[in-house]
Image 1 (spheres, helix red, strand yellow):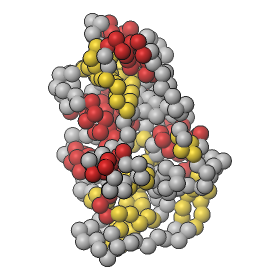
Image 2 (cartoon, one colour):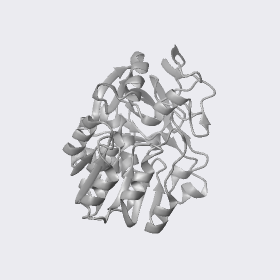
Image 3 (tube, helix red, strand yellow):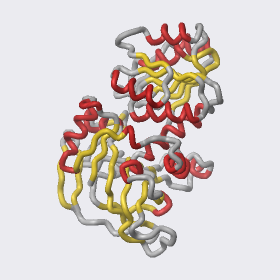
Image 4 (cartoon, helix red, strand yellow):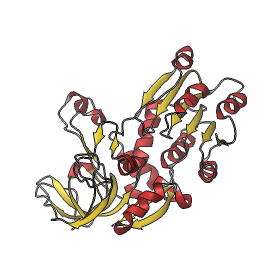
Length: 343
């Protein structure tokens, strides 16, 4: 099978490797669609995320879907030919965090595309059956690949414990921010303020339901939002930009007693804000660690057309165009929102 690996010198190579065999409780998948996430770009650009460093060549990619080719002998409910989405996180299932239902916090978790665990940019993978989810006919394989993105957003909304008629700030309107806007509207938020450095993304944010869009290169976002909210601020702020500087903006626009949900991953592995601002407001600040047990909910929302995944998919590439795809996402070229690699 064809396999793409990213080396520690940040170079891609494609080679032939053996097709894996499915163990008793696994299915063999023919991978069809792989989404490029900002975290994938971190490894491509920096060779690391925080303390996790590429040392040996690794297969990137954790947003993926495909078709079942064959089953291990103990697999009963899944059938060859089924189109499926895949949860990229493989927890141990035995530790206190897994037992409590917080599988995303498992210390022994393996996550596709995160060193040392290989990811999805290959033709075949053998995968545990309990982490494979059949797709309805109405959901494409490209959409199925980015159900993981939607899952992260659902988990973020859950952490925010948002209520009907709340107000929200969404900092960054890439794939995560745009889906947060859709979910916020679906949850009954009455006013959403979205910010981004790219006007084309703000235009899409308005289509998805953002009431006010702001570009911090053109105006003081904090002052504008505080003026529009009559100095109150917003109930909850979702940080989806992954910038070291946006956290100060978040604490400035959150209301006293409000919440800040940090989804973005800062390349510098540092977040920075004035503690006095957050302390005097009594803010609750939560960081998002992937997601947990959310795929059925995500699939249901897309199947019922309550969430639009299709419209954030802007670019498709082949496996041999992977470097071009990563550069497009890295440099925000050609109006890119979400890029998919089709294998």
